[in-house]
Structures are given as C-alpha cells and as structure tokens.
Image (cartoon, rainbow, N blue to C red):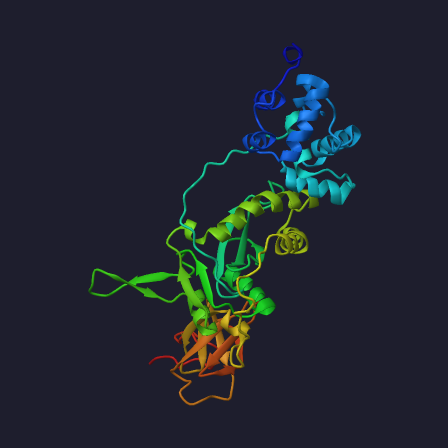
Length: 402
C-alpha cells in the first residue's frame, strides 16, 4: 500500500486512523474534529487531500523541504563565523543583539541557538528547579532597595580583582552600581549617594548581615552581646531610611539574580571594550550595562506612586555619608586624628576646651570638625617636643618640670 512506502510520524498515523473512518462514512466530521483537536473546516480539507492523494495526504507538505522562514544559508554561515571570532561563550540572546548592533547580521534568537548547537558552539542549558517561597515585590518604586556586593574576576585577568557594589529597587528592578577596590563602607555610601541624587531617599535598605551594616559588643559583666551602630547604620538613621537585615542570600534574591546577569553580560561587555582598569570598567558599566538593564530588565510597579523622599533642609548628604569619629579637645585646643595633630582655630566656643568634637572624613578626601552643629576652622600642625617638656600640638611647650 502507498502508506507503507511513506515514512510517517506516529502523529500522522494516528490522524490517518481517525480519518479512515470518516472516508468510509462511519465517523462524522464533527467527531473527527473533536478527536483530533482540529476545526471541522480543517477536517474537511484533510478529507479532500486524502481523497486526492491517498494516505500521503496526511503527510505535512513541507516534509523534506526548506521552511519558508528559514534563514539564508550565507547569513547563517556569517553569523556562526562572527560568533566564533568575537563572541565565544556568549549566550544566544546576547550574541544575537551584538550581531545586529555591531555587524548588521539579523537572525532570531532561536535560529541562532540552533545554528550554534549544530556547530557545537553551544550546549542546551539544564536548570534544576529549586523550591522557594515567593515574596511579592513592594508596590511602589522607592519603597525598598536591596543592596549587595559581588567580588569577581570581572576583567578576566586583564586587570585587578574588582568588587561591584549595587542597589536594586524591589518594585521595579531599577539599578545603580559601581566598581570599587573592595566591599567597604565608603563604597556603599557612594552608591547610596548616587541613588539619592538620582531618585531621592528610599523607604528602606535591605541587605545581608555584613559587619558594615551590623556590629555587636559584649556587655560588661554579662555573657551576652548587644547591637551597636556602625558608620553605615548611623548614616541610614540620619537619612530616615529603615535598615532591614536578611537572614539568607535567598531572601534578597533580586539582587543575587542581578549578579548572575552581570557576571554573564557585563563580563562580556568589558571583554569587548578591552577594559583593564577600574576606571575603564566603570565607564562600560555606566555607558553600556546600566542603561541596557534599566531599559530592558525593569518591570512596572504595581502602584504608580513614587515612595522616594527628597532630602530635608537640614540633611547635609556629604556630612551624613562621611566616616565620623569623636575626638577630645585638649586644653590647647588641639585634637588628634589618624596619627596627626590638628589645631582648632579661633573663635573658641563655650564648652569646646575639654569637650568633644565630631571629625568627618568625607568622600572627597576633605576633613571637617563639628562642635554642637558648628563647623570649626582647623589646620594640621607639627608636633612640638622640647627637652624635658611634653608633646604638644601647635601651642607653646609646657615649661620643663623642676
């Protein structure tokens, strides 16, 4: 029989069995349509093809022929060649974007995936499902920001190991990031400053339990510890931002997934740009990756309201986001800070001598000295040491002891 000479799929054999009873008049077209999951119109067309072509009427007409939507062979070869030369290791989605942007080679993601699979340049990705209890996004942009850092060989050996510090909005996924030498309080303060300048003060800060955000000290006389403020938690309190500490990496999954995306796409952008220094890496981050992420990967917040708040009139951002330490004022109006002696200049204020001042080490490298809300003029002086005298900080030496 003709059907024995035609190689059919099992699906086509099942269709033929159903339609054979339609041809013999033992099954209605409506019943066949229900069994095959087709419309009655499709069944009628199928019946006409079977009457004209016999059993071959159930075989798809494009069997053995090139698809009408198939990519041109020359374009496919060019895409694979460019991928082999420039984009080895890139996923099909990113590679397709680069081929279109840099080389004007237009292929779909799935077409490119198939080409790479056949060429042995890509493998099917298998992911094991992990059960996690879903936490719904916050409703408003600015209601909560997640923050974290990722130390990674971002430059793939071309330069130093860098740390990417970033914030991501919980409601929309919008990000602000920066490369730094390591994960430090100053790095987090700088990223927070950039966020506030661009968007305003978020409602809360969600991060892990790193010592930058949380510290403890032992209670004297008791076998227990108590929490003490850190430089960063103090800054958040002055800005009116709630600090929320996560109990596990999975709890702040949104920022963890950001690192997964960055360690794939951002590393390759840095490779294409030939970045070798932290300055060059930040240029690629700000010029390429962050604009792409904030354009393509953000979602619409459930609420159209913006929860960010502007800075208050008394909130000096440079002062708040500085490293602050208390120092005692000596009788000669000097203080010691980082192995240096500083002379506090006139005028003197009531309670200043013998009192305490706050020394602010700011991000721009300057130092400010604050006493009860007033900033004091000061200068660094050389220590004066007289024989049989005492070490002083700029004033006249004490008379020798008798």
